Amino acid sequence: MSAVTPQRQGTIALALSEKCVALLLERGTVKGVSSIDLAHAAGISLRTFHRYLGGKEDCVRPVLYAAIAAMGRALTARPASESLNTALGAAFAAAASGPQLERTLKLIPLLTETPAMRAVWAQSLHDGEAALTPSIAERMGLAPAAYPRAAVLATVVLALVRRALVDAVATGSDPAPVFEEYLTTLDGGPLAATPPIPAPVEEYDI
Image (cartoon, rainbow, N blue to C red; front, side, top):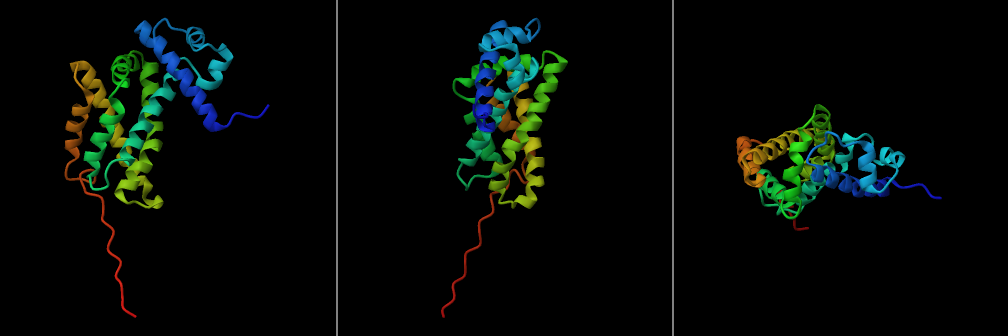
Protein backbone atom coordinates (compact mmCIF):
# COMPACT_ATOMS: atom_id res chain seq x y z
CA MET A 1 0.00 0.00 0.00
CA SER A 2 1.43 3.37 -1.02
CA ALA A 3 2.19 5.96 1.63
CA VAL A 4 -0.19 8.88 2.12
CA THR A 5 1.30 12.06 0.68
CA PRO A 6 1.50 15.17 2.89
CA GLN A 7 -1.09 16.89 0.70
CA ARG A 8 -3.49 13.96 0.98
CA GLN A 9 -2.86 13.77 4.72
CA GLY A 10 -3.74 17.44 5.03
CA THR A 11 -6.95 16.92 3.08
CA ILE A 12 -7.95 14.02 5.32
CA ALA A 13 -7.08 15.97 8.48
CA LEU A 14 -9.24 18.91 7.36
CA ALA A 15 -12.22 16.67 6.62
CA LEU A 16 -11.90 15.03 10.04
CA SER A 17 -11.43 18.41 11.72
CA GLU A 18 -14.65 19.68 10.12
CA LYS A 19 -16.58 16.82 11.71
CA CYS A 20 -14.98 17.38 15.10
CA VAL A 21 -15.76 21.09 15.00
CA ALA A 22 -19.37 20.26 14.13
CA LEU A 23 -19.62 18.15 17.30
CA LEU A 24 -18.07 20.88 19.46
CA LEU A 25 -20.51 23.43 18.10
CA GLU A 26 -23.39 21.05 18.69
CA ARG A 27 -22.32 20.63 22.31
CA GLY A 28 -21.57 24.34 22.68
CA THR A 29 -18.51 23.59 24.80
CA VAL A 30 -15.23 21.72 24.77
CA LYS A 31 -15.65 20.73 28.40
CA GLY A 32 -16.83 17.18 28.84
CA VAL A 33 -16.05 16.31 25.24
CA SER A 34 -13.44 13.56 25.02
CA SER A 35 -11.12 12.46 22.24
CA ILE A 36 -13.24 9.32 21.99
CA ASP A 37 -16.36 11.45 21.42
CA LEU A 38 -14.57 13.38 18.69
CA ALA A 39 -13.23 10.24 17.03
CA HIS A 40 -16.72 8.75 17.04
CA ALA A 41 -18.16 11.92 15.48
CA ALA A 42 -15.50 11.76 12.77
CA GLY A 43 -16.20 8.08 12.15
CA ILE A 44 -12.67 6.92 12.93
CA SER A 45 -10.82 5.00 15.60
CA LEU A 46 -9.11 6.77 18.47
CA ARG A 47 -5.77 5.71 17.03
CA THR A 48 -6.59 7.29 13.67
CA PHE A 49 -7.82 10.42 15.45
CA HIS A 50 -4.47 10.85 17.20
CA ARG A 51 -2.61 10.08 13.98
CA TYR A 52 -4.26 12.82 11.96
CA LEU A 53 -5.33 15.38 14.56
CA GLY A 54 -3.21 14.88 17.66
CA GLY A 55 -4.83 15.69 20.98
CA LYS A 56 -8.39 16.69 21.76
CA GLU A 57 -7.88 20.44 21.47
CA ASP A 58 -5.74 20.04 18.34
CA CYS A 59 -8.75 18.82 16.38
CA VAL A 60 -9.63 22.43 15.46
CA ARG A 61 -6.23 23.31 14.02
CA PRO A 62 -6.80 22.15 10.41
CA VAL A 63 -10.02 24.19 10.22
CA LEU A 64 -8.28 27.28 11.60
CA TYR A 65 -5.32 26.93 9.23
CA ALA A 66 -7.66 26.48 6.27
CA ALA A 67 -9.41 29.75 7.15
CA ILE A 68 -6.11 31.65 7.20
CA ALA A 69 -5.03 30.01 3.94
CA ALA A 70 -8.32 31.10 2.36
CA MET A 71 -7.58 34.67 3.41
CA GLY A 72 -4.15 34.38 1.82
CA ARG A 73 -5.63 33.19 -1.47
CA ALA A 74 -8.20 35.97 -1.41
CA LEU A 75 -5.42 38.50 -0.80
CA THR A 76 -3.47 37.23 -3.80
CA ALA A 77 -6.57 37.62 -5.97
CA ARG A 78 -7.11 41.30 -5.08
CA PRO A 79 -6.28 43.97 -7.70
CA ALA A 80 -2.63 44.96 -7.69
CA SER A 81 -3.58 48.65 -7.57
CA GLU A 82 -5.04 48.35 -4.06
CA SER A 83 -2.99 49.27 -1.03
CA LEU A 84 -2.13 46.31 1.15
CA ASN A 85 -4.46 47.26 3.99
CA THR A 86 -7.37 47.74 1.59
CA ALA A 87 -6.67 44.36 0.01
CA LEU A 88 -6.37 42.74 3.44
CA GLY A 89 -9.73 44.11 4.51
CA ALA A 90 -11.38 42.73 1.38
CA ALA A 91 -9.56 39.40 1.70
CA PHE A 92 -10.68 38.97 5.30
CA ALA A 93 -14.27 39.83 4.37
CA ALA A 94 -14.19 37.26 1.56
CA ALA A 95 -12.74 34.53 3.77
CA ALA A 96 -15.02 35.26 6.73
CA SER A 97 -18.28 35.73 4.86
CA GLY A 98 -20.72 33.21 3.48
CA PRO A 99 -21.76 29.97 5.16
CA GLN A 100 -18.61 29.89 7.30
CA LEU A 101 -19.40 33.13 9.13
CA GLU A 102 -21.99 31.68 11.50
CA ARG A 103 -19.74 28.74 12.31
CA THR A 104 -16.78 31.02 12.95
CA LEU A 105 -18.72 33.24 15.35
CA LYS A 106 -19.91 30.18 17.27
CA LEU A 107 -16.43 28.66 17.35
CA ILE A 108 -14.59 31.70 18.75
CA PRO A 109 -16.02 31.38 22.29
CA LEU A 110 -14.90 27.75 22.36
CA LEU A 111 -11.38 28.78 21.36
CA THR A 112 -11.19 30.95 24.46
CA GLU A 113 -13.04 28.61 26.82
CA THR A 114 -10.04 26.86 28.38
CA PRO A 115 -6.31 27.56 28.67
CA ALA A 116 -5.61 24.56 26.42
CA MET A 117 -7.92 25.86 23.69
CA ARG A 118 -6.43 29.34 23.93
CA ALA A 119 -2.98 27.82 23.51
CA VAL A 120 -4.10 25.90 20.42
CA TRP A 121 -5.62 29.04 18.91
CA ALA A 122 -2.43 31.00 19.56
CA GLN A 123 -0.35 28.25 17.98
CA SER A 124 -2.72 28.10 15.00
CA LEU A 125 -2.29 31.83 14.41
CA HIS A 126 1.48 31.38 14.62
CA ASP A 127 1.37 28.51 12.12
CA GLY A 128 -0.93 30.54 9.88
CA GLU A 129 1.76 33.17 9.39
CA ALA A 130 3.38 30.80 6.89
CA ALA A 131 0.18 30.76 4.82
CA LEU A 132 -0.20 34.55 4.80
CA THR A 133 3.42 35.69 4.47
CA PRO A 134 3.93 34.81 0.75
CA SER A 135 0.80 36.71 -0.27
CA ILE A 136 1.86 39.77 1.71
CA ALA A 137 5.39 39.58 0.33
CA GLU A 138 4.08 39.36 -3.23
CA ARG A 139 1.91 42.45 -2.84
CA MET A 140 4.81 44.36 -1.30
CA GLY A 141 7.12 43.35 -4.13
CA LEU A 142 9.55 41.71 -1.72
CA ALA A 143 12.16 39.19 -2.78
CA PRO A 144 12.42 35.92 -0.81
CA ALA A 145 15.39 37.34 1.10
CA ALA A 146 13.10 40.04 2.51
CA TYR A 147 10.36 37.62 3.61
CA PRO A 148 11.09 38.24 7.32
CA ARG A 149 9.62 41.72 6.86
CA ALA A 150 6.46 40.23 5.40
CA ALA A 151 6.37 37.67 8.20
CA VAL A 152 6.36 40.47 10.78
CA LEU A 153 3.40 42.06 9.03
CA ALA A 154 1.63 38.69 8.89
CA THR A 155 2.04 38.42 12.65
CA VAL A 156 0.50 41.87 13.13
CA VAL A 157 -2.35 41.16 10.71
CA LEU A 158 -3.29 37.89 12.39
CA ALA A 159 -3.23 39.61 15.78
CA LEU A 160 -5.77 42.08 14.38
CA VAL A 161 -7.81 39.19 12.97
CA ARG A 162 -7.94 37.57 16.40
CA ARG A 163 -8.92 40.83 18.10
CA ALA A 164 -11.58 41.59 15.50
CA LEU A 165 -13.15 38.15 15.85
CA VAL A 166 -13.21 38.28 19.64
CA ASP A 167 -14.68 41.78 19.71
CA ALA A 168 -17.22 40.99 16.97
CA VAL A 169 -18.49 38.00 18.95
CA ALA A 170 -18.69 40.09 22.12
CA THR A 171 -20.77 42.78 20.42
CA GLY A 172 -22.73 40.54 18.04
CA SER A 173 -21.42 42.42 15.01
CA ASP A 174 -19.95 41.51 11.63
CA PRO A 175 -16.18 40.95 12.07
CA ALA A 176 -15.27 42.34 8.63
CA PRO A 177 -15.94 46.04 9.42
CA VAL A 178 -14.30 45.58 12.81
CA PHE A 179 -11.16 44.23 11.14
CA GLU A 180 -11.15 47.09 8.62
CA GLU A 181 -11.39 49.58 11.46
CA TYR A 182 -8.47 47.98 13.28
CA LEU A 183 -6.40 48.06 10.09
CA THR A 184 -6.66 51.85 10.11
CA THR A 185 -4.39 51.88 13.16
CA LEU A 186 -1.64 50.95 10.71
CA ASP A 187 -2.36 53.75 8.23
CA GLY A 188 0.78 55.57 7.17
CA GLY A 189 2.90 52.45 7.49
CA PRO A 190 3.76 49.75 4.97
CA LEU A 191 0.26 48.28 5.10
CA ALA A 192 -1.22 51.49 3.72
CA ALA A 193 1.34 51.88 0.96
CA THR A 194 0.43 51.30 -2.66
CA PRO A 195 2.40 48.39 -4.19
CA PRO A 196 5.52 49.55 -6.03
CA ILE A 197 5.09 50.09 -9.75
CA PRO A 198 7.93 48.59 -11.84
CA ALA A 199 10.03 51.20 -13.60
CA PRO A 200 9.50 51.29 -17.37
CA VAL A 201 12.13 49.58 -19.46
CA GLU A 202 14.05 52.14 -21.49
CA GLU A 203 14.41 51.39 -25.17
CA TYR A 204 17.36 52.58 -27.18
CA ASP A 205 17.61 52.96 -30.94
CA ILE A 206 20.45 50.97 -32.41
